[in-house]
Length: 312
Image (cartoon, rainbow, N blue to C red):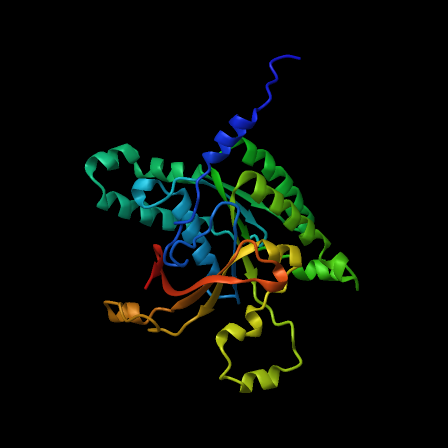
């Protein structure tokens, strides 16, 4: 039979234990002690232009940067379904964060981090695997392929999907009048993701584009400005139930106005920057999709600079 070796249960457990928990990936976003645990899903939801992509780059950089530069040093898979990943922007953020880390570290730590800026950048990018998908079928195949990577790479802790809703309208058109057929592919993706989350204890961050599903009361909704922003039609989940059951944290992104929540800004230039607001809602993991129980919530704001996201 050759040198074929099977993995024992103890070896599997030891390998999975090496996977990093991301509960402290960004304290500004999540309520205290309520960050994403092993096997949890975070959905970044909002209209176009509400800072979702920049926030995703921020979280991505936080993961692949070394510890001495304020990162976590873990591997990430980025599934790009919108074909919108801007590598130049990502590299710019990484370079700024690495430079900031070197300026605040001791000479010995800087020496340990690498002999050159280019080497440090290459090390960060070596922790990133980018996959492009052009359909729900390709996304499903990618997730099947991902299982092989997860079983052999214990440092792979985060899966980013930008965006999980990219094929919503294509699937609706292709499914005809049957709601089950319209949601079939995303349902299969969600079921496979559920198994990967359980078996390999990864964390998933996925963006979803907000849409208006109810057009009947547009006029009346515009006049009822006193309603709470949390009741906005754009914030309502619309993807299939299996996906909704997976989501344990929702980051609701919106545009603020220049100067909003910027009392700590130290210059007039900062006060004029576009502000973005994020409202995090964390759910109990055991709650069902039909009756989700809110565990905690938190609101935060940020603006975007050449070096990435800055929270205020």
